[in-house]
View 1 (cartoon, rainbow, N blue to C red):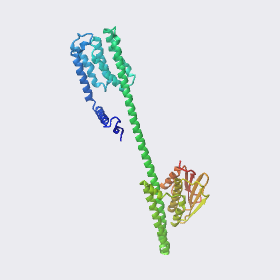
View 2: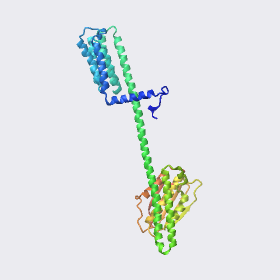
View 3: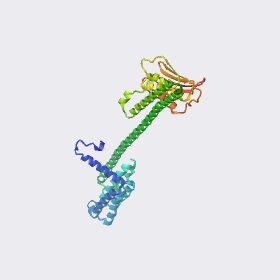
Length: 414
């Protein structure tokens, strides 16, 4: 429910809500088509001034002998400029002030002179406050002129009330302007907040897409590499050792099911299936043995060394997943690029301040991936950066390839 839809506590029928909507529509129409209202107001005041010019002005005029045509021209000079009071308030006031000066100097003292307050209001509404100073001069000059010429003894009775009216109208315009600016500021702030929220949503969506792409790459890339290795080994063993080929097929089936399970878990997280996420947690360091066993079954000899047992306070689950995925990606690259006869070593070291994972291989048959290329290496660096870690990879002097990961011992990512 929006602010406009909330009923007022003293208006249970919602009448004020409908009135507010009607006023909003009228303001919107007036903004798009200002001439109907301007023309209507000008015509009404012009008719009133002409009625007064027919003879009523003589009741208050110091000189009631002035000709009717002269008073009629002055009345039109005080009313017709009202049509431009909103678009050109300064020019409208200047024309009306000239007519008022002639009116007071001649002794007509037309009541239509008070219509000068309408353009004064719009000047206070849209012009800088200093513009009201010379507006005061325009309004006060006819008053002082008439008072000095025809009412010297009681001049203040004509000038002071008119100046008070001028001050009140000017203050009213300033107050309306302040309220309008305040409302516009609230609207602008709300728009900025909405834009910021949209940007945050887009950034979060982009980060989530990157995370999903990284997970998909790690899951599919690794398992397909293992399946390829198993298939190649099974093909060579099919003619010589059917039992070994059957074992390779079994391993392919197991790896495929594991890959499908990981993908199903990832897609379940995307559907906000929290129960599925709890039932199938992300891999941790305890799953490294199963990972390395699968790589060995694919035909790559892997040696796994663990130096120093984990401390009583283990790594955060996200950090453990980072170590697991880096080792997984490094072994996958070894399967794809190291060539025949290659061996790999996984060294996991715990220290009081950090955890280090180092994966090396002895491959020389194929050119390893460049450190700046490939989604896998980029994903490993992004994972390390999430936990203030570092990742170094490159060729070894004796041949082969090395991937070194360092993560600080923290309970949560920074």
